[in-house]
Length: 302
Ligand SMILES: Nc1ncnc2c1ncn2[C@@H]1O[C@H](COP(=O)(O)OP(=O)(O)OP(=O)(O)O)[C@@H](O)[C@H]1O
Image 1 (cartoon, protein in one colour):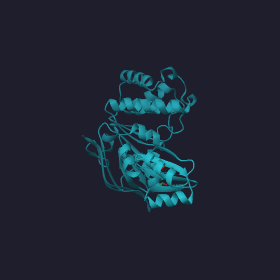
Image 2 (cartoon, helix red, strand yellow):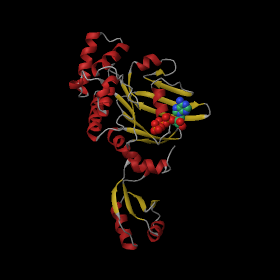
Image 3 (tube, rainbow, N blue to C red):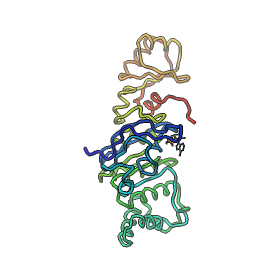
């Protein structure tokens, strides 16, 4: 495996605030890699350092074997970026938006036209070619931004919350396109608050909080490691909690519910039903969302 991004003791401070606190991670070529974390965890700050638009405070950040501080131009030419906000030029048509962007990369006009047509086809916006950008739906705007990020045929694509606010159809189309890009060998790095999205798409992920990386691994390995393969949910009552303590089970009380983390949901369900009074008991597979909440807690962030 060839590493595309290597971060060592990477730190970013804004005056007294440490937004990214000495983190290390490696992203391999052709991987789909996710950054997760509550609001303010430091994900966008990491993305902006990767995009070489926010200087590293200390530590090292290498991409394609080049240092982010000394080779930003070379690195930028190899990547495409889908930012968190829709920052399209609304005074242009769909086609013009992409043509203008291709000029930044000095792509000859005829070649750019060909490339833009291919990209509009790729994101299913061919029939909107001459539509003014401001008249596109939210999903179409996101697709246009994805197309724009691909104008320079990047080896790595960075996406900050690519599907925020989109309906299921639009999300699925973006997922499908990201999978196609991965098949073509493009390294994809994304942040998302949609944990099902990350679970479905990403080969590996990190969970950040307060600028630090708390968890790293494939979705299935982190689920296995932090919550086990299944969760049994039951209505909270003192007798149930006593039973769980006796059995030394791993559990969490969440308001009116008890979450029991287990690799054998059937066994726990049968046991509890037999030895104590339980109601509304049910089992389900554990998800990345369970890991996220277990690791980062349930406290609301600012
Ligand atoms: N330019 C800046 N100046 C000062 N503080 C900043 C700046 N950018 C980010 N921060 C702070 O750094 C911390 C991390 O912010 P960041 O935007 O990276 O979080 P995030 O994980 O992307 O959050 P979200 O999920 O809300 O997008 C926050 O406390 C934020 O207020």
